[in-house]
Length: 248
Image 1 (cartoon, rainbow, N blue to C red):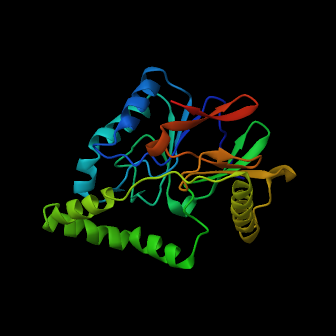
Image 2: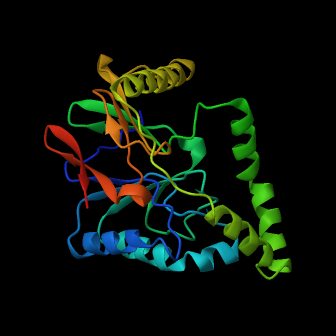
């Protein structure tokens, strides 16, 4: 049986930073973690506003944050869950981090005596979205995009990035009733995934969920919707017997 990885008490979760050269506050925060390391950092997707790992122009535009993450990975254990804004990432780009491409999400982790499924969050949505994102992240498509990028000297990528950068990043505000309904629906989706893949909850305990993507920044007993760092500069910190979203 493959051992279930463990979340440590001082772990930090960061989601949806949507880094650009103008929206670069994450570099400053990661530098504080480099100076004062924790044992684990979970990068939960959409850390970059647009990073296509196979495309040289995309790498060049995001190099400052790529370098900072690689420095951090020499100080602490870093997990990277690909999102829908950052994909095609490999160990050539991040040689010392533990990568979780979309195909490996959700991933089961333990924390104290509980278990959680971790994912960026853009899963179990619609068939149309699933077809779109699977096509976009297909290795053949990524290779084609790499060729186009080289032949256009990066101009096509720059045009796409400029258009995407114009899209505003917003938090999703839910009242208590809406949050309960939303979390129940998401937990049901994850439970259906476990049943479909014959993954019973370990030792009979309830499995919770930690995910980003929706920019919510709220939690229920079993569901943690990570905040968008781009919107609030907030992170999730795991601490003994409690979980809190702490502003940085």
